[in-house]
Image 1 (spheres, one colour):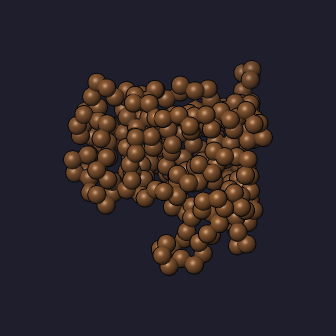
Image 2 (cartoon, rainbow, N blue to C red):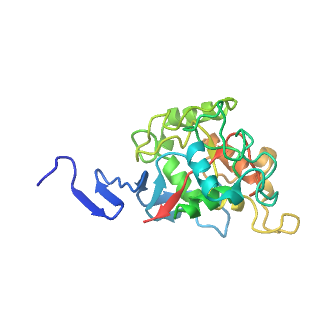
Image 3 (cartoon, rainbow, N blue to C red):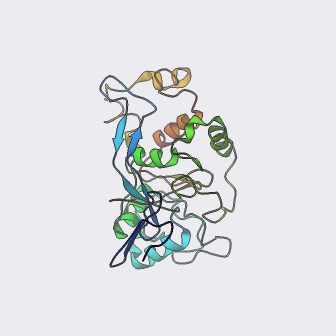
Length: 261
């Protein structure tokens, strides 16, 4: 039997994989094809570009409802018992209680006030992981019609416009924005997102003794050596990630999961 528009259908247990213009899905995930990510900053010891293997990424950010289910199953991650080593005092502060969202929290909005440790634990529980910076940036590079939307100044301006707005008190539900080329929603326009290796942004060791720090990354010298000085939103993401610690939580930072193919 031939199905118009589908060139391959394969069902293996709970895994449903179908190929339509190269997009694959597994339980709400989509395939990002292999590509190349160029870091914002490089040095003499870093290749100019990074080859990224094809991978799966969640179609949407993780929601309050999904994280609540995780906490109920894994009560050591509930708000009242979390160690400050793994999350600061604002962890899940927008929820009414350990196991109750409250009327003011949209269950379908992305979960926020989440630490890197908590996001990583959720991903592991789901048999997934957090995306790397290179993977996240490769997926987020796509606009609604092209793999590399950064060549479109209107796309850059659209992202920057969102970055310049204050975070709303009540976040809208996931899927509020149009999907990108791959079919991924809300990489821009809803919340910032944790990545697995966010801590590699500036230094590789303890900051006071790390001789590899590039002093030109600060203040007015920030654009010196940047691979794309016109992509201002990339500077903002770089700065944001550089300011984080793994136990930090904020009201505009969520996450989504990834998985190897």
